[in-house]
Image (cartoon, rainbow, N blue to C red; front, side, top):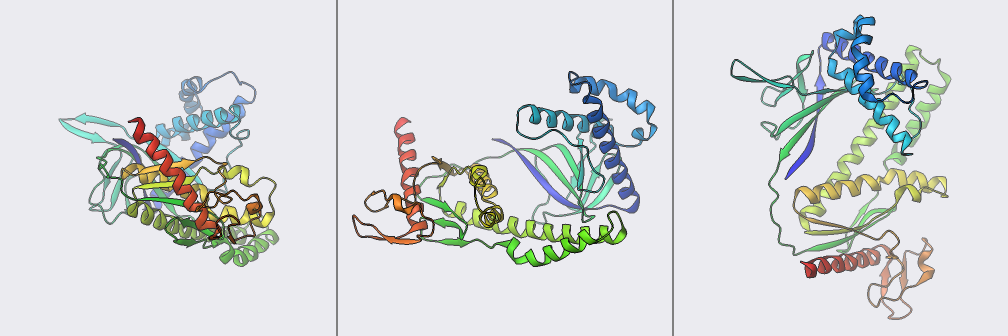
Length: 382
């Protein structure tokens, strides 16, 4: 099975390489903003016309010739995608790129043969910890110490400069992996929440770390300090970098925690069943505190991780109906109690069979039963 995998490394460029990266980012930003302004009065022009116009623009602006040409083409493609998202009502109207934010540029991998030797403008050497990139040459990297080399065919590389002034490169590779055939013997239902992030039908609860709550005071203090400083001053930029570093810390903490939970569940079970939650709709008409907690939980990220890990490990992943009342049905007798719509009720006794139920574990059991129905229906069809 062919899959796309992205390997992300920390870059350690020299001063000359940093200058070239910053120049490339500036050129990409220039192309994006130039054509965005141009398209305001010329909506009928497509990206192929803009690609044809690029050589003319490079002749008028000599500095564009100093950077990788594929980056300029990718800037046009990004703008075209932004307009497509706008016309399809997925996002708002494209905005001009700012100098004072996170920036990245994408360069394509080009292969060729010279004197019977294969040539590639992007190469990763994990033994010497170097990556070869167009125009930049060899750059020191760090990451993936458990690998000797990257398998598969490199498609492109995205170089990112964070607001924290750290540089990263993400290499997209097409790999042909062999997915093992798994004998499906274990199944688990998963209920997702805010107090406990993940509750399994095995009775295991993974708490919500509430990372934002831990750093909220520090964030507020720094943001108040930033609001009092002169925009664009050295102290302003220093404070902005501190805030960015704190957000990066929160992001990395979440990513590590969610990956650990997903790995543990997928490794221990062959069939995983979750709810198909409409997270965007959950934000509507809710209290501010609820929205903050829901955002902090990163439910969508967790579901995406589960689906991806099941796919590459040959496990089965089911999503049951969004509106299935898993919390209102007794997992012992099947009685539906509409009073349980009140989220403050965490434990209760079933009025029909008298069983004592934990709200979240009961919901995860009902999700498991729905998953079993889907599995046996599928098996019977085969």
